[in-house]
Image 1 (cartoon, rainbow, N blue to C red):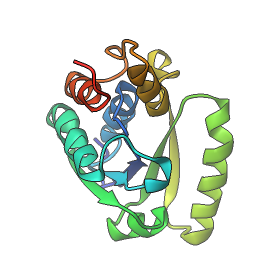
Image 2 (tube, one colour):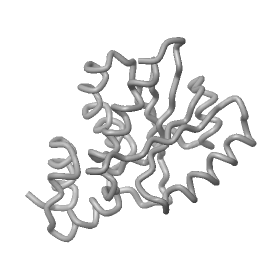
Image 3 (cartoon, rainbow, N blue to C red):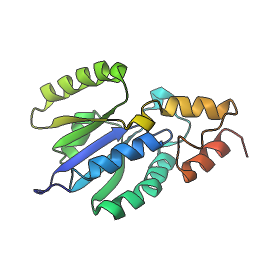
Length: 169
C-alpha cells in the first residue's frame, strides 16, 4: 500500500467482472491507500447485467482483495464524464488496464483528453498479467451465450450469475 494516502479510481463497465479485472484491481490496491471502482452505467454498450447487479457482483468479488491488501476499496456506479467522477471521489490517479497494443491507442487518447480536462489527475496504466491478456467482458458474454466454457475467465459468483443470465444451468 502506498504511503501518503493515494486515492485511485479504476473505472469500467464490468459487464461482467473478469479475472483480468480482478488482477488489475489487486495490483492497483497495492499502489493506493484507497481505490474506488467506478462501475459505468454505459447503456450504450447494451449491458448484460443492470448497473445495480454489476455493482453488487464487483463488491462481492473484490472483498477478498480488500482484506488481503488492507486497502479501502469502494464500489460506486457512475454515469458522468469520467474526469468529473474522478474529481467527485477525490481520485489523484485513474487506473487503466492494458491487454494489448490495440488498447493503448484508445487509452492514450483518453488519458490525453482527461489530462486536458484536469491536469491534477494522472492516468496510470497497468499491463494485464500474461494469463489474462486475452480476456474481455465482451468475449466472455459471447462465449457464454454460445454455450462455451467461461469458468477460467471469471470468478465463481460471476460465473454462476452469467450462466443464469444467458439462460444456462
